[in-house]
Image (tube, rainbow, N blue to C red; front, top):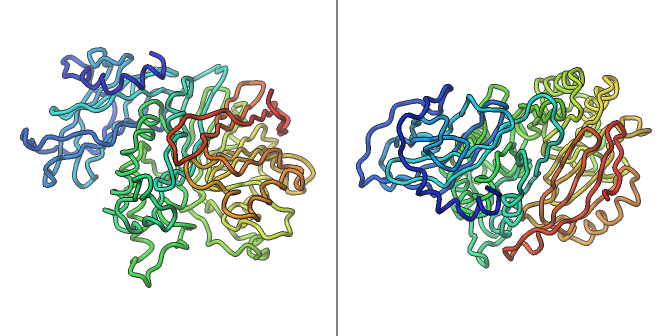
Length: 515
């Protein structure tokens, strides 16, 4: 079944997700595991928020959904799940029952194991009264791998516009996974950062979200968007949060947009609320290292995901505080995560994996000449931390590092200079915003900065600041290719058109225009 036909028939195929007997028992754990209570027909549920899969490995993948009880006092709902090689539940390889509980906002996750590497699967859920949409996912490859293709997204603001990028991603045939690099949602009230009245996209609740109920409601609203649902149905996702999943310019101990004096309570409680809702509502595997985790695509690519926001970040300085930005004690990752990251890069090189992909939130390479005011919320505000990463790459002779970033509502292709500035140590590819306002449209000075950057800074090979869209990164043993896809007017539902492309040949750390 090709991708376009899959998208057209998923709702019709809900009727195919019927009860069947004789399915194999799921060999691994499910979450949560407590036994639920039986419900009556009057307490029927529905799957209003679609389905999703995520954190694929070679033999397993997280399956996610959320049931919506019509009786709010329902304490729990038994949910049947299945996964198989076709869209027919009768062909399921594994099935089982998981409990959707009120204490987890009726979200469920299944860590579906026993799967075959590099294989596409269909999956679905049923509560006995209604059936979920049909989802499609894919496991990671092993051994000799010829190519890997990933879509990269960032910054989806619900009131600012439609999620055209997600619709285009859903219709893309050959992706291994979608990387969401943060700002999957925004915490603001309506008109604080985008007025949704014109598009009937007013945030829910219509206030800045602070409580656990607030964060859950905002996640729920985002997952009613048909384009976002389609992208989740079509591919497995690998996700990390940035700041707006909690509060603007957050760090380990607070946030610019957290104000206890305005009745927003303690940062620790708000942070915990945001994290809990995120884990409930996202198809992410819950591991002791938090968002730090890795995904191996055979001998071709190793993807490591970093939390540059909440795990260990020191508070941001100002855009001209050079002393703070160069403080050797400052950290963006925290000492534990930084150590895990550097060790992982070394291990990947020792295993002779061709490409080391780094999924993280904020821009890594410098945007200025080192003397001008800078983005203190990026790695520029934590220069010693960046230097430690670059020194480790250089001293370990770690080859073919590709840093994938978001956050800044614009598209960039950069060669990352080493600490001395005398050669390129890695490359960085920055994804544009899905629907947040593009950087260069916000002011004349930002427009001028984006326009001048490639001419003024030799390591910047591409900069585009006027378009929404997404990034596709494809690697094989010879090269890594980046293609930015731009999606036009975000206030009008539409399809993507292809933008610019760059290529990096293995072993060079150099970017060239793609043919």
